[in-house]
Amino acid sequence: MRRSILSGLILAAAVLGCGDNNGSARTVTIQGGCTTSVTPEPPQSGDPPNVARLTIDAVCDWGGGLKPVATSHQKVTFNQDQSGTLETFAQYTLPGGTVYSSIVGSSAPIVPDMSGHGSTTFTGTETFDGGTGDYATARGSATFDGGTTIDLQTFVGTGSFQERGSFTH
View 1 (cartoon, one colour):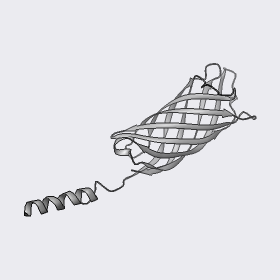
View 2 (view 1 turned 30 degrees about the vertical axis):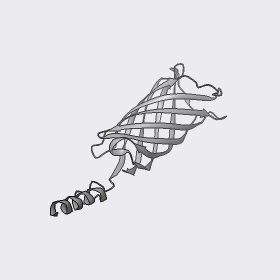
View 3 (view 1 turned 45 degrees about the horizontal axis):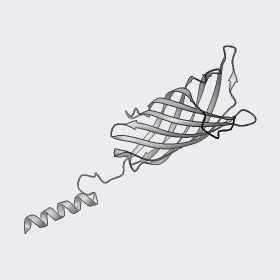
View 4 (view 1 turned 30 degrees about the horizontal axis):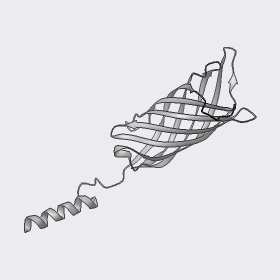
């Protein structure tokens, strides 16, 4: 009888997250940056001519020893002044799982140089919303700003950005 009562108490403590604090939310603070490589994606059916789609691969250092690798898919809608509106879905791979985010932002018009390349700056907000493994319950946000240089013929390029924010999981 004692054994079943003790087993019941241990099970209740585990379910309620008591004991070893495994049930407590943890916060990831983002205070760092990422370097990126940019490659074009084919247009999707129905895309107007002022839309470009890009794959962006990033290697990040968020500080505190966190160095995720990310892949994102970005839709850029160019405005009449050639600035851009950015919509992005990203996946950050960390030890223990993957964090999902959606990103909205804007870019300045691309400034061409004499070598056939162009550069731009961008800024925006990232919202972390779930993931896999340890990050299934990730929630939070960050702001970012950075720049990129692309080949104006191929739209292949490189860049970097700084990011500040946090999420809990």
